[in-house]
Length: 310
Ligand code: GLU
Figure 1 (cartoon, protein in one colour):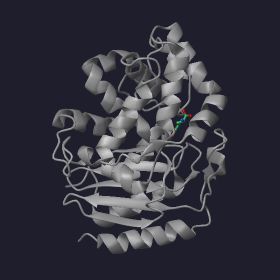
Figure 2 (tube, rainbow, N blue to C red):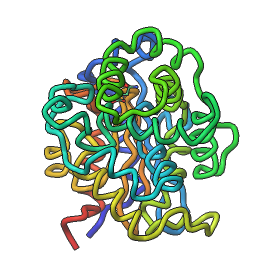
Figure 3 (cartoon, helix red, strand yellow):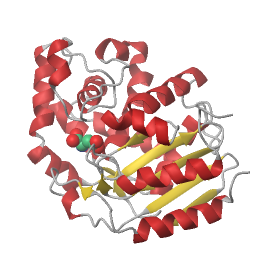
Figure 4 (cartoon, rainbow, N blue to C red):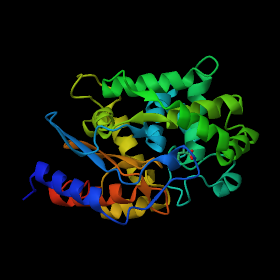
């Protein structure tokens, strides 16, 4: 018998706010290092549209790699299956910013959710727009999905990452050498850094992810955002690739499609049941929110939400 959702969230948030072991806040992007590890927020929107929130659920944070889901939606919309000529659909088993597989595999990244793959996807979006307007397209997409025009890019985070993003520049230049990136590397990286710097609260993120929980249709606007098949496939990629080299462990423990970001956010999808966003800035060694992952384990177990169980 599933637990009461409101009670479960209150208990999870109480634990998330008071835990002493919180992981390490990302420090390789200096602006992210300023965020207090004490935060914890969670938002769950069930199929009937009820929003359940606890903790710091309305505080905006840097969504970082969660943006890769929205960029993929944007690129699939504008380029269709041509996206898959640039990027694969296999888990990498490597770190989020790893370059090792690229050389052996002709510069084609394993999947759209590691940094190399996301940069390749962003390059497609950048190419479809004048100058650096691709980041505006991704931001408009996120705003439309969340139904919230107040969502914005945190300019300080974008600048901070651009000033220190040497590894991402390395990946982009390497892919350019293989012809996988076609646009100017500087413009593609600029769009990528801006998409990663979008700031959203858990509530806004859970709203933006609802279409993935409901066969591609956003229940609040009634709009079919992507086809049911595309939604299913994006969910499959989130499940297999959404947590870098901890994706298998996340599937084992939580069993839900989800995408993490180094800002400490995770968007998770319980198909047919709920869209979930959780935020706690302290990360595991693989770069996934430590307490966010724990919270999703507790929530999925308590509610019986798991794609591997009826
Ligand atoms: N903007 C980050 C980077 O490219 C994203 C990584 C992440 O969130 O996992 O390093």
